Amino acid sequence: MSRADTLSIQLYSGRFMASLEDQFKLLQSLGYRHVEPFGGLFADVAGLKALLQTYGMAAPTAHVGMDLWRSDAAGTARICRDLGIATAFVPAPPQGERDKDAAGWTAFGQELAAIGKIATAEGIRFGYHNHHWEYGKAPDGRRFIDLIFAAAPDLLWEGDFAWTIRGGGDPLAEIARHGNRLVACHVKDLAPAGECADEDGWADPGHGTMDWPAIVKAMDGVGPVVLVAEHDKPNDMARFARRARETVAHWG
Image (cartoon, rainbow, N blue to C red; front, side, top):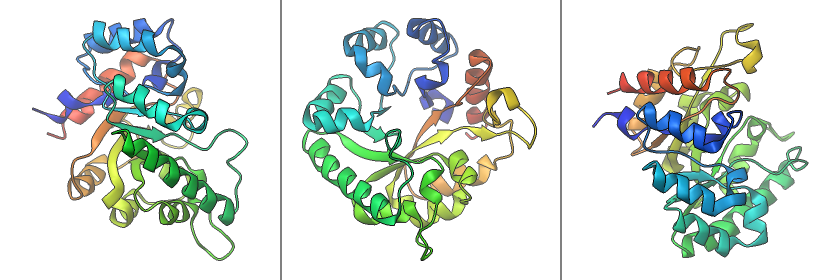
């Protein structure tokens, strides 16, 4: 079985499509059998579950926002379990909570650690998905991503290495440093400077500037990692989803 056969895809990528069912139909036609739901879809859990069943899709991972965890962490974990989700990631701090100092990021890590204990008790693995904010630094040079992880020793990680690069980090160095937490990865890419402006500078996987073969080799050295195709703003969902599978298929 090739990596493409188990490749998942973040459903946020197709949020501009006419309906969620249209996205499921497209993904099924392209050979996808795994998807990664995002927070907004938990407003209709029954509808999401029905589509997963109808189209024969599994959701090994999901993005679940802090609002749901804060309102009822145990109940949110049970919803994930009912949907067949094995690992849930907080995708980002809530809007308005992203401009933190070192103490703020440490406190956020402590909150994630507390939620993680509840989720784990309900049988759900719990982790965090990075953007670029976490690669900022305190005045003494400490990086916020390191503060989060130090405050949450058991927190898992879904690496978004395109955002890592936008934050000034090095994917290979991050894998070497925090690879023991890495259980999933967003497969996306960065367009060359000045290109894909209508897609906010993102590119289809394998069609940008990132050295994915080197990143994949590094990930293979730390253990099994769920690969999840993502594009934050594709102007052609079908093209992106097709190219993502083609790229990952070349990785063996």
